[in-house]
Amino acid sequence: SPSTLPSLTSVAEQAITTEASLVALRQSVDPNIESILFSARHVVEFDLDVQLSRWQRVNREGALFLVRYREPRYALVIHNRKNPEDLVEPVVAGMDIEVQDEFLMYRTTDGSAAASDAFARALWFHGGVAEVQACANLLQDIVWMHQQQQQQQQQHAMISAGRQGSTPAQPGF
Image 1 (tube, helix red, strand yellow):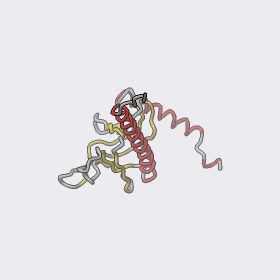
Image 2 (tube, one colour; image 1 turned 45 degrees about the vertical axis):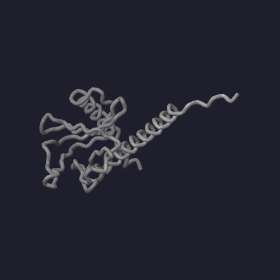
Image 3 (cartoon, one colour; image 1 turned 90 degrees about the horizontal axis):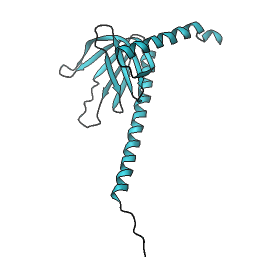
Image 4 (cartoon, one colour; image 1 turned 90 degrees about the vertical axis):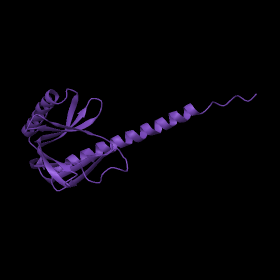
């Protein structure tokens, strides 16, 4: 029904806010950011202290952005309100993602068997479970896309290596 649709004013305000955020991110984080795919008004970062086996709140919180660069590559960015040190976390094929209540937990692995089972970072979302799930879904899609690209590159490399190692057949006269 029409009453459930957002008003044109709220859509326009959101577009203006997103554009202003994009300009700010390009100025303060990286001029190569092409677009914002997702944003959350407020998150708080926690890192896993492996020695103590517990989460430690980090002095980093603020707006979260999932951004796309021109290359294309993707990153999570926390535009820190606590101090000038923003978080810029590349989204890569080896990223493991888990959602637990209002927390998005993740770690980045290189695929080795020595990787720890514990997540290295957690982000608490002030916007609640729906917000964290929306972010996690996008992240998982990007990670899957990176994994597919890696597999294609490996297949192409194997095909190329096979061609270089083989000798052409000699004509039979």
